Length: 186
Image (tube, rainbow, N blue to C red):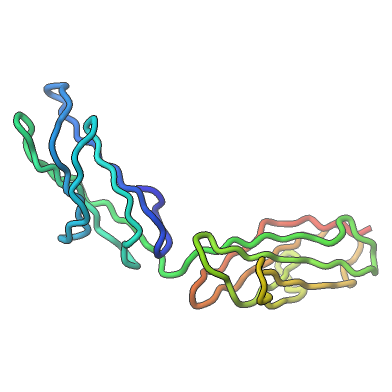
């Protein structure tokens, strides 16, 4: 299954392959995909494989199985349960940029965090800016796309600072943290 975990509403591809190690021949027939006891789809095998794509899985853990219906010379069989986790909140990606790097000591530098939904929609909320583990400021995501929050400071001392932006999430989007930005102050 791909992806696993998935985001709510995200399309998941499920692939099942039927093999017969004793005869070495290619099984034919139909495969039934199930979520618990609910049938998702019936798919005809193509070269011993059946694939479906589905974006309607409910939030939480989904117990998926593939049940081979059998064919002449090939007995019916059912796969082990595979759990597909669908997250209740959509993932967001946070990226961070600096207005000047290196910057000058005592001069303002603006950090801009951009928060992007991984599937769809517009993230809302706030972003916390940190230097290492120390909070140095925060900003609220604007109303226009791309969704950005900024923080400006002149208080960074000379040297290299490890700046990150942490999006604290919302009712729809999970929290996310940017990659580390090494800010040099001269």
